[in-house]
Length: 70
Image (cartoon, rainbow, N blue to C red; front, side):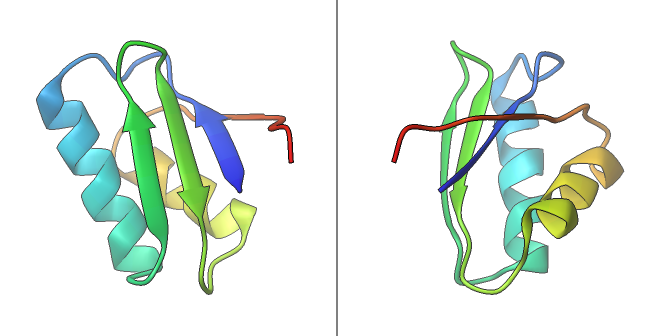
């Protein structure tokens, strides 16, 4: 599981844009977004952390990788 802190994600549109960007890079990824915590979690099927980070950036947001337990 990869996680990114995205502090500039602050509405439902942001959530949708980020989810679409991640699915465009890795259609089979499992994406979970916690808007209140500004946290995007991804269980990738194909893409690596760098590709997912770039996808979020290209959607107009600023992802910061965070450590996850397990």
